[in-house]
Length: 205
Image (cartoon, rainbow, N blue to C red; front, top):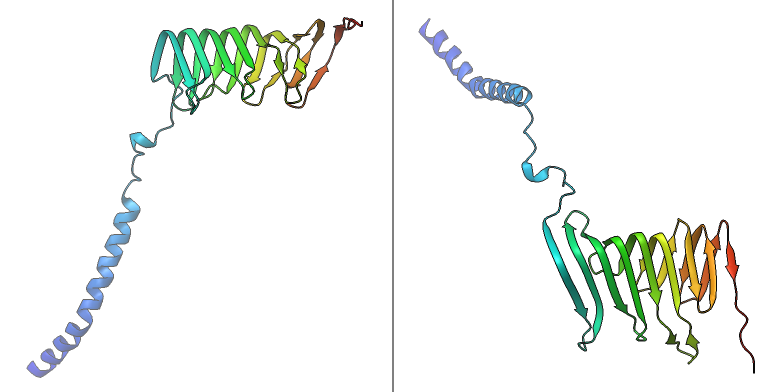
């Protein structure tokens, strides 16, 4: 009888670790299934469109490597939004100098600029002026002026666009249209919709 119990115990001791490991695995599986999912971390929450700093009655200037003024942004109030890296400015005035020295100015009741102020959306009494300048061939390019309730100015590439009615003054010529796409580098002006224009004949000697 004792020999039989001893033999049975020896056989049981061989399989006991396997049984315990199985029970442990089942317990772990049950624990994982029963544990609720972790709550999202606060840092993983969606970024809100909220200003992280403000400026009042300010002027911000940028310079090139030679110390020459590249741009200046002036406004009464400004709000920076980190999620889009944009700056919203009230009663804005911008000056931007191109590589050829040409000056472009932009004003509006409100503006939305990107990080380096190379792209500006102007809202309310928007006004962009490209002053006369000699191009690479030595030909004088006339003063160009854009007016509207909305203008989208790309100051580095010297482009102005609008999907709303605009007025364009090119030297002594004047045009109005429903939309505008102007590329100064390619000397191309696209006007669409109800386009009207008055062109002044060039004086001849």
